Image (tube, rainbow, N blue to C red; front, side, top):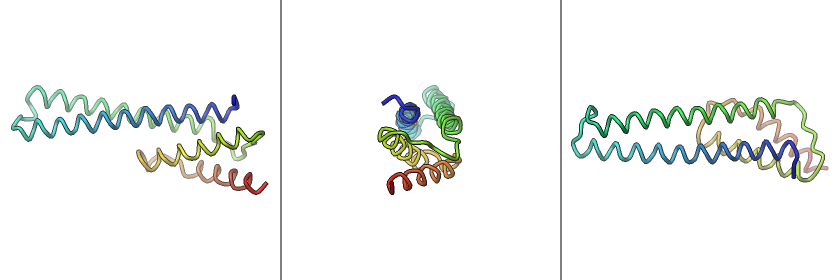
Length: 130
């Protein structure tokens, strides 16, 4: 399975995993910060300041992953037509569509993923009829 679509699917899945890990870290940081503030620490104390800094870094990391995800889609899947030459290509396209939908729903409604999803859906629908 060394098709171009398999490579794209693999890249997108890797970015999705990184996003999930980063969001989990952000949740832990946020929870720890809330606990520290509930215990009476001020935002100017060392621990809350450090956690706020980590929260900002993690937020920037998430934005970077979303930008990378969008870049892979725009550079690899910006075609109007997709030529599926094998069953492996079709399976890779299904995985790509699934990953795009997951990232759009879980992390960012702002990414312009709708047109790509529509094109992939059309391709997969026409392929399933053949």
